[in-house]
Amino acid sequence: MRPTKRPTPSLETLRLRLDPLRPSDATEMVEVLGERGLYLFIGGESSTLAELEASYRSQVAGHRHRSRLAMCVLLIAIGIGRLVAHIHPDHIASGKVASTLGLHRTGEIDSDGEVVWALDVGEAAATS
Image 1 (cartoon, helix red, strand yellow):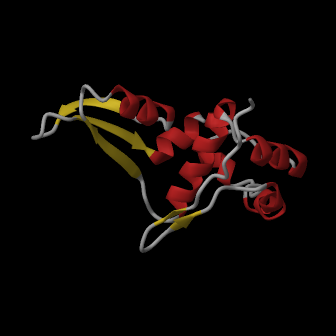
Image 2 (cartoon, helix red, strand yellow; image 1 turned 90 degrees about the horizontal axis):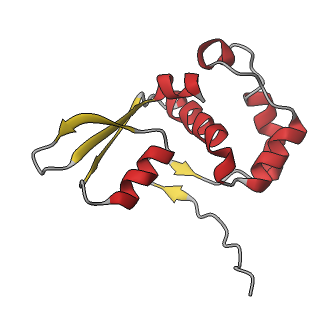
């Protein structure tokens, strides 16, 4: 039996809504991500419409660098420069999620004994 693909849900807070990218979004995003000035700071180059459509169709772990770049562009656009997570040292799954998103251990332990992980968004965009 083949596992069924579930749609990726939207993420919504009081001030922000994140929807998963769909192939139909590529037309608009190729223009947004095509701005040459963007790559002066983050490195890399813009994608073609076909590349974005293919990327948005797949959205699998193999595209985590492109996904991290997209996340960083969004966070920079809304004024967030740093992500921080406080993760219990025994919670291995949370550490893996943080690592996949590009966060790294800072070497700090908070008052609850949790390990502090961080991602400086501009730095992460430059390495994606």
